[in-house]
Every structure is written in structure tokens, then in C-alpha cells.
Amino acid sequence: MAGGLPHPVLFSNLTGADEALSHMLGVHEAKHIFYTWIAMAILFITAFFVRKSLKTVPGTLQNIFETIIGGLENFVVENMGEDGRKVYPVLIVLFLFIVTQNFLGLVPGCDAPTANVNTNAAMAIFVFLYYNGIGIMRWGPGYIKHFMGPMLPLAPLMLILEIISHIARPLSLTLRLFGNIRGEEIVLILFFILAPIVGTIPIYFLFMLAKFLQAFIFFMLTMIYLKGSMEHAH
Image (cartoon, rainbow, N blue to C red; front, top):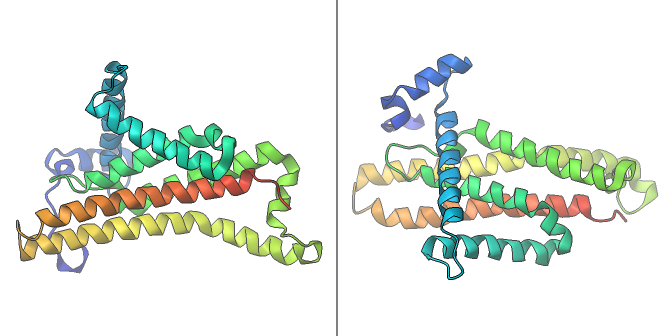
């Protein structure tokens, strides 16, 4: 950890998984990959149990997921119209994936994969390719109009500005999520050093809300980018 802070004791180091993965993949550090796989396993196992226990009168776990998934679907449809249902499966998977990764940082012995810039860059690049791919499939060559602005005389200038703006989106998504999650973990370590129990446990609830909010922001920005690519260019 930078700034002279102590390195946390992580399961990936204790089990040797970090070293094994680093050697296998030929990279300097692979703990974010290990915990990304952990997040994926959590989601698959949870989905299996939720699907297995589906009832007409939902239980607690089913209620939680129905509230989150149904609420976010309504949010997307209200903002994007019925077209939002076509891309909603990707949006909700992205949201649940990021939330799970974020929350791993609050589990003792674990680290949030989203506190590593490589994890966030991979998701941001996927979002960039996905929304542009949707726009190209929907509008074909006419998708270029989305980059040319509302007035033809300004098209050459707007084309340059819009391309720069779109290229900056993956960088913005990456650094926003990375900065917030890594910053929260550094603050949590500082609280633990100053007041191991009194200062740390209450702040957990605040950070849970913050990590949920960061996942929602990533989700919402992806929705906005998709909405822009699917709308008719004027």
C-alpha cells in the first residue's frame, strides 16, 4: 500500500494464489484476477440458489433480487423507453458484477478487484465497444451522424470533438471507479489504525452505501451512452 501504510493480509497471498496466477499469466500482480473470479463464483452460486428457490410467494433472497432487478429495469425503461429492455440484461449483469467486486473490499482478507485499474479498464473498454456496436448495428453507416453535431457547417469541428469525447469515456469510467474504491480502502485502513473497532465498524455502513453508489454511477453512465447510441441523430 502506498504512503507507508501497512499491506493488508489477503487470502490470495496466504494461499499462494496470487503468486501462482502471476507466474502462469506472466504478470507482476494477479490478486485482482483472483478476486474477480471470486466475485464471479459468488454471482453464479447466488443465481443458482435464487433460481432453485423461486416461489410464487417470494422469500427474503428472492425479494431482494426482485426489488433490485425490477427497480433498475423500471429505471432503465423510464429513461430509454422500451428499447431499454433490449440492453437491460447487459446493464444489470454489469451492475451486479461491480457491486459484488466492490463489496469484496469490505470482507477481511479480501481485496476489491475494482481497486485495480486493470479491472476497471477492461469493463470500460467493453462498455465503449458495446454501445458503439449497438449504434452501428442500429444505424449502419448513418451512425456517423451522432458525431457530427446538429449543424452541417460545424460537422468537421464537431466530428473531432465528439471522437475525443467518446475516446475519453473509457478513461473516465476507469479512473472514477478506481479512484473512489481505492480511496475508500485507504481511508478504511487509516480508520483501523487509529481506532480498530470503534472507528472501523460504523464506517463500514457508510462505505457499503458508497460502493453501491459507485456501481450505480457506472451503470447509469453506461445506460446514458447506450441511450445516445440508440437515439436518432438530429
